[in-house]
Image 1 (cartoon, rainbow, N blue to C red):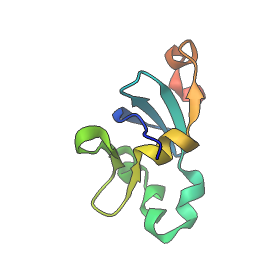
Image 2: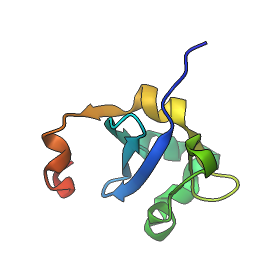
Image 3: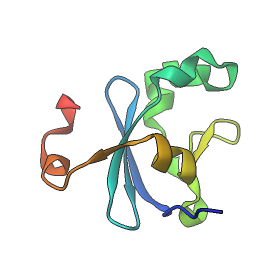
Length: 94
């Protein structure tokens, strides 16, 4: 069974995207837009709610509340890698 790096930090970006930094130092952009068609993720449409994302205890994922969350494996596998140079570019252009 594969293991995935834990999440170090998460930042909400425009257009339902997240900038996720893993303890390995790798940075990925995760697009939440496809999720909002599912009932469980509809609250993400609310911008204030979306911006309230946080890293779960011990870094095993991220969450917005007790019901809306994503695992580190989902973020790692389905996130788009950001190069070290691009990680320093203004995130509004993501």
